[in-house]
Image 1: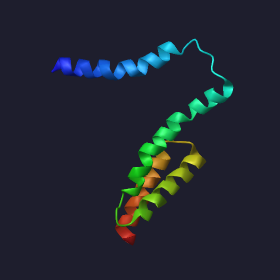
Image 2: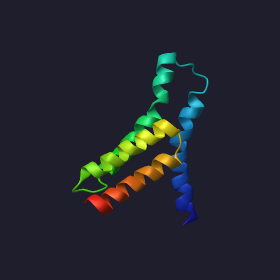
Image 3: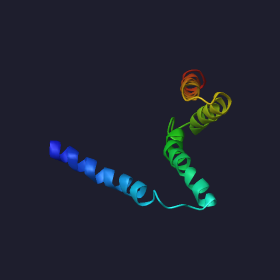
Length: 99
């Protein structure tokens, strides 16, 4: 069993390590470097947005309202906890009292 875990570690670690090792001495143009900084946000959005639409499959607007509330709170408070808490609370209240 330990060999399976070690094998999974190696298989996932090598693709993450190689770009860091191979590109550490390369100077990218400023425009490309700025563009690369946005990739984690785009990937996070692509992972989260389908879940927003699947909160309530009959009433997709509930998830969208929760996402808008979370976005607004994140914009105002620049926090992780406040948007998370308010989005969950919003979806809970909408599903409990409106639907």
